[in-house]
Image (tube, rainbow, N blue to C red; front, side, top):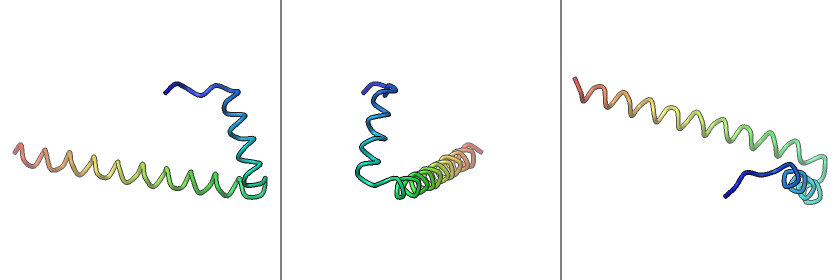
Length: 59
């Protein structure tokens, strides 16, 4: 899978506007950002827990 170019991003935004309308799109973007932030925090917590367990096992 390659990187998205500028033209592809414009097409995606255009179709998203057609599907959801201009009023709903900011709400969807905010929800997506919140979801990504929560996922990132959860994976960070899992990685930190894994490091703590490994350091305890090595002592």
